[in-house]
Image 1 (spheres, rainbow, N blue to C red):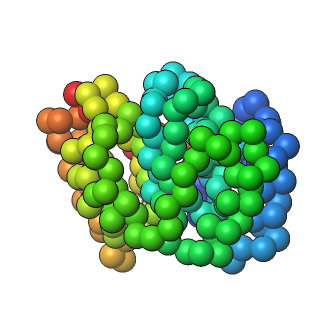
Image 2 (tube, rainbow, N blue to C red):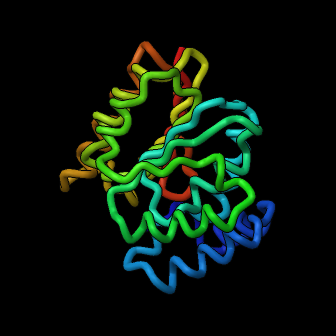
Length: 211
């Protein structure tokens, strides 16, 4: 994954961001040691952003598409108040196993419900209003995930979508995933149902608030 600041600036931002709990640091090390695509891990800067947004929004129900090894889910759960919960979706059973082991070791793990299977099916099965969601799943599915989430998110609720710059490929999208993300960026910017800002955090995150 390409970043857009100089490496020394990325390192500075990392060092100047409050450190994550040791459990998350251990999970990051385990992910790099055991998983084929460790660059998919959310990491400190974006993870702390997820926690802070959760603290600010105070959601009762949060939803995540794409659990991976559980770093982002635990970051969200850390910001959830007691009694609030997170539904997270994962398709790969090996990733889900690592995530569940991490949830079991966390004081916040009881707030998380991991649903194994296609994220779109899980989203369509949620009938109560969603307050906050984070999408970091297959990029070709983003347009459908977005639409389902806008329909299910309460007014004032927020949606955060990851990898919305696709390592710069959105400037001249040639592959299917980049084309889907580039088209969705334009769609969100003109969607009268929401307000948004595209942030250049890591690989780009769209912060969307439903009106």
